[in-house]
Amino acid sequence: MLNTWLKIQAWLRDNPGIFVAMILIGAILFWTFGCEPTTQSLINPQEKINEAQLNSEIENLVRQTEIRFADLERQQELRQLIFNHAIVFAESGSVNPVGVITALMALFGVGATVDDVRLRQERKRILTYEQPPAPNA
Image 1 (cartoon, rainbow, N blue to C red):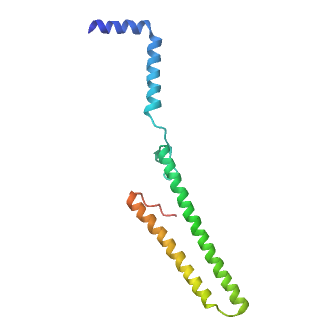
Image 2: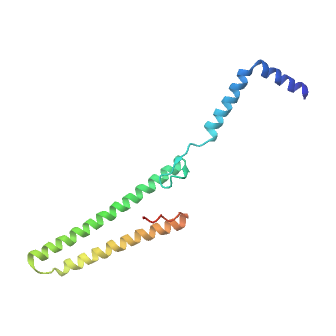
Image 3: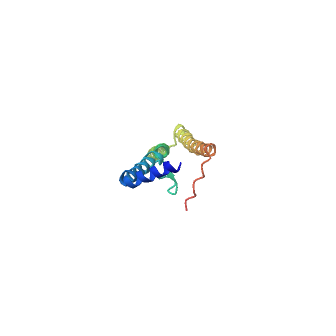
């Protein structure tokens, strides 16, 4: 055992450059393969996430954006429908019962859709154990 240790010491004394290069290569290999690259989360900047988690966050944000754009479009359609019925009433002086019923049904449909989206998001948050969103101040 002592003889082996003396041989190692002699080799290190004769080849210090190779020894340092071996240590550096080992450290670089460990850093390259052992440490996964991370970045700040888009949703929670204090949290570090990897590439797969970042892609998941981006997909969720895109889905939420699409849902909100669809909600805005529905609201705009409802506003336009009400405006059109107001124009017909102003021009003719009479109320179109079918138009009023259509407007009320559209209003009910938008409200039900918004409520449904809110409930689905709440169920998803409960099932995935997400933190509730911070209230806007």
